[in-house]
Image (cartoon, rainbow, N blue to C red; front, side):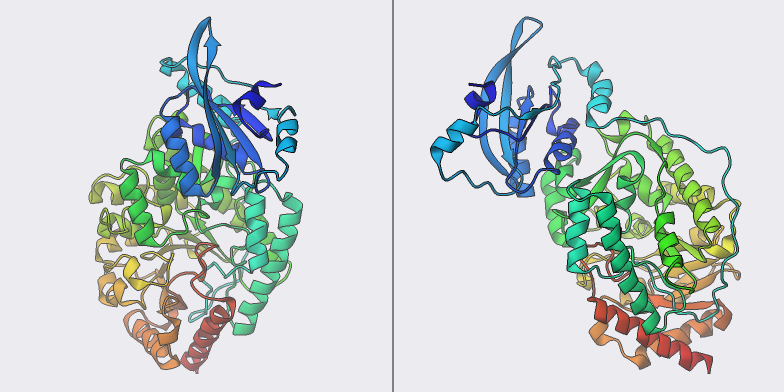
Length: 539
């Protein structure tokens, strides 16, 4: 009988040895890597030399909905010395035991697919950096291009155009395909084919509604920002629930996730384990498909450099590849600039850089939802002035030398739930100097909700900057009327003039794929109402 049969009543499908890594020092990344590809009910054996895992792993199982089927304590000899070793048998999702007990005993002798073991003697912490990077994923050396493509011509976006913010509600069948693909259970070609069909539906809806500028609906993304973690070199996506060991106060973090109404079991977060590189496009492939099905101007949203730096900088993960947050930020800027160059070369009319976490800097409070702000504020945070200065510097580096008339920055106060009480509140006054300093000619701003304050707070932005005015509150569609939306647009024209105003919603319709703010039919209705307002204003 095998060692595995002696340890557990059922045979694992996959077994791996985590050595002395604890849950807060990389073990959960390995668990996620091995458990995601399993079918529901599939069994993973985890070997560990770290005693804290005996407490932390059952807690992780409870949080993630995976079932701890059995655990066993034994020993292993390392360099002639016996060390305690724990073995955990974890089911992906709920476990159903075989009906025939004799069958379970018989198949226990079947060998599992064993990942080569890692034997690290407890206490040898100097080996941690090298070992962690070796076993989490294969670290690749980023290829940094020496030359980037020049912008290609793009359609001009006329004043008062109706511009879709970005995300669109995903069909249920696409959500299923998305999660199967993220977990490694659906081949990429099959997922892309499903996403193509969903994009066709989203673009057709935008065209029917009369939108002047369309997006692909972000159908290939699990959410507005962390999707890049599944595309960049030396980065992987993990569910938010896997982050509990990395935060200073796990209980407080759980409380804030509940307060935020974030679908933590579905939303994934990027974890950096090596130097970032862009060997695959982040959004160029999205653009190429949209161009094949529409002749309208295309807008593409990208997470901003400050948002990504704050999101990706986590102790015990990113500090294995970067000594400081600033070093990580430099590579974030580099990969974003590479992507923007290629998007401009693909004829994108407007590239929107999303930096909603800026409002968390000035208005977020620990324990009230702001501190964890849509997964965009988990990392290090200094004082308000220091953080705003860092954000300004990173945005200036990303946009330097690029055509400002095709660049935009978006700021809002949170868009993960229709409950207005869950999101931040505060006007743009503290952010106006930063916005005015940027090499962008379009500011896309949440302005219809009372949480955003008055238009007068934006006094000080440059005269050459136009405003994508949030005239429709997608969180409260039942309260929106043609007259109310028209009145907001007119007030914006009174402040900035017709030539500087574009019409949009406060934020997207489905910032998080699993937590859409509206249904697709409602989203189409919102754009259609704004199109009627546009037509009334152009008479």
